[in-house]
Length: 559
Image 1 (cartoon, one colour):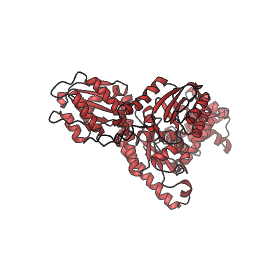
Image 2 (tube, one colour; image 1 turned 180 degrees about the vertical axis):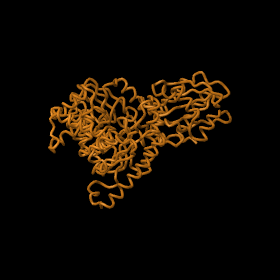
Image 3 (cartoon, rainbow, N blue to C red; image 1 turned 60 degrees about the vertical axis):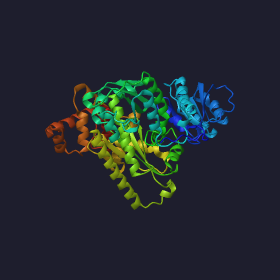
Image 4 (tube, rainbow, N blue to C red; image 1 turned 90 degrees about the horizontal axis):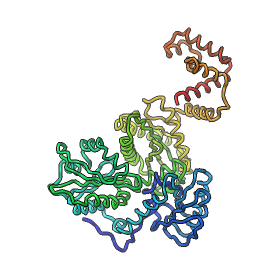
């Protein structure tokens, strides 16, 4: 039964709800010194020279200034009691850091507005969240678990249809009462708590989800009698450009009301906050954690905000696992996005099962799992090496099981890299970088599911050395350049043959078999390489430099 809100409880939206709605395409949360659960009750537009007075619990949008020019407005917003301030930070990292430091000192959250976002967009989306709460306070008080059921029933009464609410994984979150008017798809959806796979395939083929993700508000889906599906109308529930779920209205024996599209559009807007806060939906227990974890791993957010959400100390030790899905080139945009969303969910469930405080975050086409330890960095220094070894073995086993699950689910050679543990969450960005380096090494072995830093340490260090050489083109061996130029002009492979010869310590027979050539052919290539380049292969320094240069060239050719 629907439980009405307590009228004595004021309708309040929190900073985290607005951040979740705006994050990604519009703004990034750069710092939140007092946390993300602070109340936010209004949206204020200000210019740098405006005299800000009392703006308690406001989001201040500072227009007309960029970078350091907005410093004064940021500090003024903090002094006047604002919850958050949004500015265009500019591209200079020094400016971003100065703004972040000023916001931290003033106790105000800082939102960086992306260059592609228009101020009217940011204002409109922020006001939508805040105004939805004030215009419909029953959406912001203390709720029973059937909020979405109440909304579904109301929409069903207004449209004369049968309503269901689904998340982005096509799981049924709520539905209206329907008696015996349901079609087969509806019946199976409720019984199985998910849309039947056959009907999902039809919807994907018709591009329904792709169009909803692209921003279309209301779509009509024709009946499919052979699948037991009557006519339907669907709307996406969105937060900014993020699709949170869908609301479906199935036509019953009587036609739907004339205003069904308009009513469905309104219901979708009301459902935004409900889905953000839904315990099983993409709310503060998933989307916000993902955003905070991604911000930490990128190095743009301090650990305090995420630590507060996870219930751990900012100085606790942690391990970062990087996961590359090795997606196929033929996967299109919508199916790629849907696959990544489902994969993130799978990883999140497995991570939470492994450790309550673990969190998964998609970032730059990869997935990362941040696994905090229960204690703090200094305390963990006393851990025995035996305990560390057991913990590492357990994590390795869990990661291998996760990768096996993902490979079965995706049909791609998913790989995971376990970075060395770091002493505090502040070092998480460095751990992410280590995981990326391990994954780059693993590209050469697609069949290898998991690797730790210790297992591929030499290859990772070599990769870092080669990166340094590539970043400093003035540091090069002209002898090897001569060989590379010769290969390009004449279509030969003296560089490749010489590298394999050096790698094999001059074992001609072994290398010749690997290259499928006669040993004398290989000997001729090596003599020719020495003749052209002037290399002295008896000199260990020249051999080492040549091997590094040859590996750098091979990496450039592959890239």
